[in-house]
Length: 354
Image (cartoon, rainbow, N blue to C red):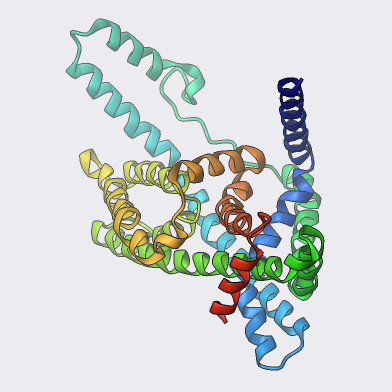
């Protein structure tokens, strides 16, 4: 009977998790910007604390953090927009260069008939965007009607993000007090409140450290791209800075994008040099710089990080990839605080921290 009860509980938990994931997918348009705002609020909490320590009202701290977040969002949009249009404009040249490379590869291994036939089919396939005479077809662009259809939904998500961020920053002290009162016994409420604040500080410190590391990586990438003669070199550096917040998947996507842009800008093997140089810089950052500066206390299991990123991106796309790591770190730190029976030990740690 005990075994049957255990299996029943496991089944109930499994069904609950599946139902929760399904619900999160269905409410992506509301919950994704809301969770992003909460993560941004935790990261920007030192700004609000600074204003409060200077004697200003919490409203000013919330407004300052909100303006900072909006400026960062606008900067991201302004950075990525020209790169996207540039890659679209260069797509015909890239395709032409790729066809030439495929033709050369086919001529080199002409004795391998099977491989030659496959490459020939790939090159002459009409679905790849070329006509019967090899003429390049224009890349389809979003129409004005498409943009108008998406505008209300995007504006609604933007309002959800702004409202959640502002009111979280304004009332986060009350939120933490309420959570401590409902997540623990009366004797452990002070410990739980301390752990909530500690989790906030850990996430904020982690994000600040990673931001500085990514800034250095972006600067190094921009300098290397300038030396290589890559068009828009410093813009690529800014992209490297931003996309490195999405661990593993972001750098991999940028390697592909640089390979794409390198084929468009250069000829021969030199076209792969920008992607190779960035990969070397990113490997140096990941293997030496980040472990040294982040330290052992904030290191996360790589498998856990990778699985969290995959789940976040599968669940909510790019927003899920952005919030996955801060949420993972927050939950891990908080999970240390909530087990019962450790109140005395945690209170001693809180006293020592003061």
